[in-house]
Image (cartoon, rainbow, N blue to C red; front, side, top):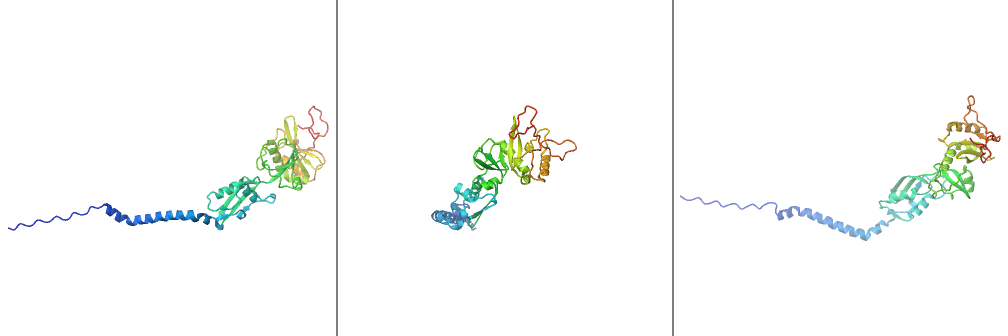
Length: 309
């Protein structure tokens, strides 16, 4: 019997996952990666070579004349934008791609003595910028040796070079302050007396013109002080304590303002007035006069010759 021939073994299959297969499968991806790396290197070289020239293009350079300031009021005569950019060394061309550009502009304007707050900074392309600010408003002139210094409603010292003598004379004058500012323009005076004075001026300001008032003056008696409003003829209206600091037995602020409004209907006063005393029953609307008779006790008179409580 013929013996059946043996079946030849099949060729062994090539194992999967070999190096050749890995390279074959990923050859296209490696090619893309290589192209990307070459492009990045080439791009870096090109930017190093031509980047400075590109950044110098006019549309990518912010010039001082293209910074628009919004919010400067009529009472500020100086060029805030020019001064702020100059003092911050930003009065040259500035690259628009600087990520800190808006912050640098905000800081430059924020430290200007006339600026109370920087509300918005917007940088746009082609190269331009707009800065929106809120400015400080002068409310009074504080008399110091040698002249007057303007302050706002928070007692912050303002630049004095923006006022003519005529303009300075149109503001209420604060007298009786013995201190000098503790810092430059744009910083607080640093004396509670100045803060009291501007508070008194602020609440009485509408009545200054009808009553021809020109000065808010501090008068002292012992360890206490009191404010009086003086008109152009030198006649005084004793106002008393600043708002919110009334002493026991003293009229409240609303009553004082109502009395001032009543006085303003007849024009400047021609005799001393005291707004501090609380009227008795039946005469709530009365405006008490100051007793100009010599005091009977030993209390010394104040600088105007009027006794203080």
